[in-house]
Every structure is written in structure tokens, then in C-alpha cells.
Image 1 (cartoon, rainbow, N blue to C red):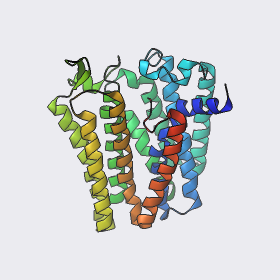
Image 2 (cartoon, rainbow, N blue to C red):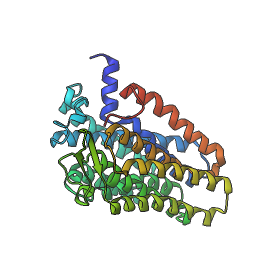
Image 3 (tube, rainbow, N blue to C red):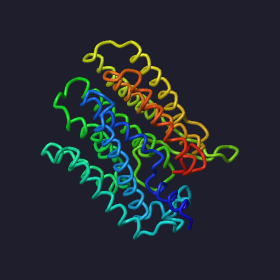
Image 4 (cartoon, one colour):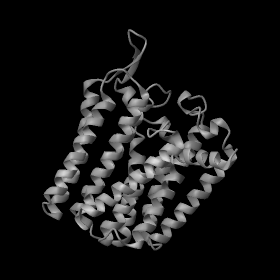
Length: 333
């Protein structure tokens, strides 16, 4: 196998196209605590976000394959453990090594403090619980939402003890954002898979339409629950203006992103023809809009320049990496 193919295989294994979803959160936590985006320590936490993503998603890829969920999944036939581009032994030791690096690096950045160590321990427990038991429980969104939210909490707590309205607004928004991604998007993505699914237990299913195309059934109460979660993220973020004061441009930008995110939410859950690739595109867009909406909070310390920097940086990473990994912008996951 060529070097390029090997690199692509490892990027797919770690699902590195979506590193832009966690890395900005670590950046946001550090920048808000320090008071500026333009500090070398923020860059250190960006590296943490990238390592966190590879280690966590790599473990998820390995465990799902090892337990048999991905071995016979037609949507995962191109994944490197199925194609043989990466062997199970390589995957196992790479995951173990990356987790060791992640924990050591996080301990170092947090100054080996007791508070930091406890947060890292909670992240480890929650992440491992999700990766090993998520396929067997309908409420898998709880541990993964905890660990993803702590990606913001850890760097913030390393530099600040001001746990005021702004801090809790972002924590609430991040938690609800991740609940949606796992409980709603994740279950829609795998609606036909043989695994524990909250949405399936609530009546979400597919059937063959008149012309043979798959049709998605989404009960009204499920659509309403998804809408409430989407609105909750926006309402949590609106609380930041209690502490930071009214900044009209920031509020307008956040509201525009909320509108875009809501539109993608409708495309994810609307009961109609189930074209998985189109649903995946909507899920990716919804997640990106949500993270950018959360990132508007950084405008309270860096203004529009910080927001533009995060947005452009994310796009400059996402577009070429996705093209390299998948040959297109939407992921094949």
C-alpha cells in the first residue's frame, strides 16, 4: 500500500474530517479563560483537541469493529479494518498509544492539578463507557455528551475559576448540542442497524415505498423532541448576554446560525424518502452550524475577528481533508 493510501486509512480510522467539531471547543475554552484567542497556550489546546478526536474516535472505530457491529455493515465496507488496510493489532496498539499521549498531554496542560485530573478521569470514564457500551443502551447520548462538553471545561478550568453565567451557558449549549448529535442524528443515521436505538423505541422506522424506495417514518412527538433540543441550545447561549451585555451583531449572527441549524434539523427528521447520503449531509451541516453558533461566544473576548478566524480555520481544514479522505465533502460513515 502506498504512503498516501496508508495516511488516508488512518485518517478514516480516526474520522479526522470531523476534528473541526471538537478542536474549536477546546480553543474556545482556553481563549475565554485567558481572555484572548491570540495566545500560544490556545494553540496548545488546539493540539489537544486534535489528539482527543483521533484517540476517541479511533477507539470507537476499533471497538465497533471488534464487537462485530461494523464488520458486516454495508455502509462500513470501505473502512480500513474491513478492507485490511489497518490490522486489528495495529488499531489496538495505536488506540492505546494515542490514549496514553492524550492523558499525559492533558495532565501537562492542566498543570497536573487535582481539579484537572478529576476532569480528565471523568472524561476517560465517560468516553470508554460510550465506546464499549453505547451500542447496547438507548441512552448512550449521556456519556458522550459529558465527555465532549468537558473538552471545553478542561481548558477553561485550567486558567480561570470564574464559573459564571457565560461558562454555564456554553456548557448547557454544548451538552444539548451533543445530545442531539447522538440521540437524534446518530439514531437516524443507523435507523436500520441492529443495535439499541432510542428513536426506534419511540417509533422511528423505515419501510419500502410504492416505487421501492426507503421511506422514513418519524412520529410527531419525536420531531417535537428534536426541535426542543435544538431550541434549548439557542436558549442556553442567549443567557450569555446577561453577563456580557447586549452585543447586537453577535446576537444577530448567533440567531442566523440558529436558523440555518434548525433548517438542517428539519431535513434530518422530516418523514419522507430516506436517502442516507442526503441525511448525512444535513447532519454534518447541522453540527457545523451548531458549533459555530457556540463559537459566537468567543466574540465577547475577540470580537468578529476571532469568530472569522475559527470559521476560516475550520473550513481550510475540513474541505481539503474531507476531499482527501472521501473524495467529497460529505463523509462515508
